[in-house]
Image 1 (cartoon, rainbow, N blue to C red):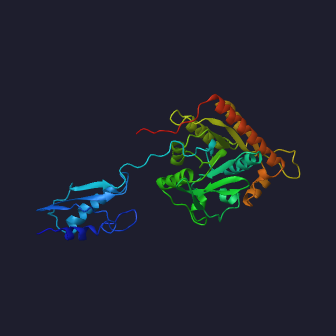
Image 2: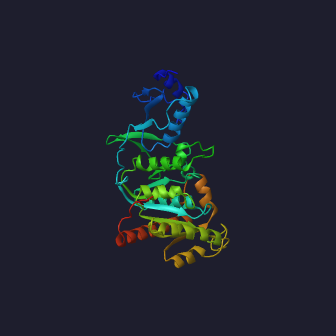
Image 3: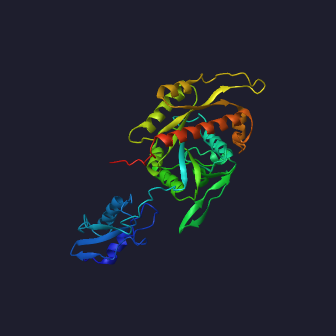
Length: 368
């Protein structure tokens, strides 16, 4: 059988690149360096980057296509070279947020403890205290910042800054806001693999115009996950605030969250613990306290771990109602609003003490 280039190319048109479903010939991935020597065929496939996850599968598919649609006698195995257009990707900037003074993570060991509510109201309270504040909703599978700030239908736009196209954060109550929720349909479930979620999150951090900020708060997902690793590998986080309810189940998970950040490989300072839903006070009897989730469990955990108890936030219907209406309770001069202003003051104090006593946090470098 006589082999010629078009016969090989026709076979390669049956190979689809998994990233977009188009065949590799149409995509220009078959380099113009094909050599045919008897039954031996060799050529190169061109990929965008050396880290392309589909390199091996596409090479194997190309070998199989030639042997299937041309002949099993073609000597092709091991003869397909791989080239890349961007063999040396440009290095990432050492500090992706040079105008940000403090990066504060708000985390929890489990869902349902009011972490996002605390993050949103802490941001508002800091802004009310006169600081420049940004809030990133990094809770991939349960983004709630758009709802809490009445921005469910916000659209993202870009503008050019120093030759780069950057996302313009939404802004409300004096706070710059970005959320994973702005990038998905709120009526549909988020079905993202870890790498997709990490890439989207990285884009919101490094390709957004955050500008000058005193505090950049990150509403982290609950638990411990690869999203947390993405954050500590992307940013030198000044410190984290751990949110928990007083009940023992939540405290057990909060303990794991503290341990993750204190691990020597991560080494992010824990600024303190916030006890949310610390007690319930009925509106007609504001002086009465009912400890429906247990009493002062987070306070005892803080003492056990040697970290600060930053505040105790009561369980009040107004907090949930205001969040659902896009008006965080920290905007009001009610007892609940004042509780968050007090929390903001404690977070500022803990941050100042941390900065005075410890060097800046380094990004995590994971070695394989």
